[in-house]
Length: 144
Image (cartoon, rainbow, N blue to C red; front, side):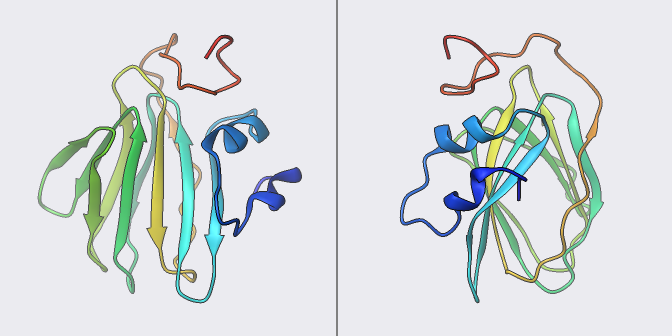
């Protein structure tokens, strides 16, 4: 969770992406929006080139919905999969995976997981595009 007023965004009946974008000034960031005894729903923002490598959730399946940008997953021995806005990605429990924001735009994805799932490490950055496209409502890009 961010160290600002974003706590007011937790467990709301409706959370606006523009509100999440407004409270985060630095990248990468992730914000829990729903946490209860059965679920953790988190929004994740990465710039092109930001990655997390060799993750495994031993006990729980993981799901993501890509909202913006292009995200590449390497899942187990299946090779890589490019996901775009509207795509849903599934990784079964116990499967090693890596995630990288590719293309020229920042990415926003929604992670759906168990509330006790391990925390992912902070994304490492390998810049791809120094001038990414805008995500509507993102305050980093005037006029978005």
